[in-house]
Length: 209
Image 1: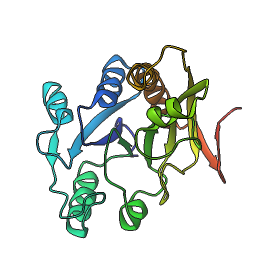
Image 2: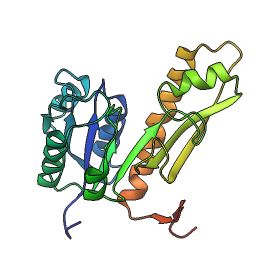
Image 3: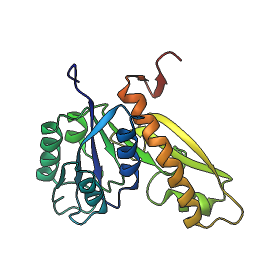
Image 4: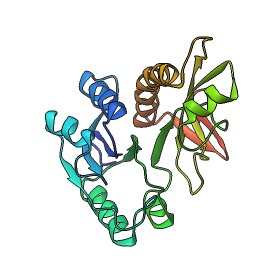
C-alpha cells in the first residue's frame, strides 16, 4: 500500500450483497479504516451492483464464461486486470459463487478473504446453515478465512458463534447467522487494514497477542 492513501478493498459478489453493505457502511463510518475501491460481479443483474451504485462506488460486470462453478480463463484475466487497475490491497468475497483458480490466487496471494456461514472446518460448501440444522448441532456460526485453492479451507481469521434454537428452521437460523456475519466481516477487514493480522502456517494471530 502506498504511503498516504487509504487501504483499498475490492469486493466480488454474485447476489444481493448484504455483506458488502455491512463492509461499505463500516468503511463509511470509519470503523474499518479503508474504502471500497470497486465491486465486481459475474451476474449482470446482481443486487450487489445496485447497492454499490447507490453509494457511488465503481462497479463492473464481468461475463464469467461457459463454466457453471468457476471463471473461464478470459474472465479470470478480466477480473484480475480490473482489481489491479483499482489498486486494491485486499479482496473480499461477498457471496461470490465461483471457485477461484490458481492464476487468480497467485495474483493476489494472501490478500483474498471470504465469509462462510458455519464454524469451519464444519459444514464447508453450499447451504452450510441447512447442513448444520439437518445435522442437529447446538451451536454454529460464521467464519472469515483467507482463500486458498481448497473449498472453504484457508487459514481462519475470525469466527462468531450462533446458537441453534429448538424452534429453528434452516431459514431462521440463516437469518441469525447473517446478522453475525455483518458484525464479523467488518471486524476482520478492519484488523487486516490496520496491519494487525499475521499468518503463521495455518494459524492467524493478531499482532501483540
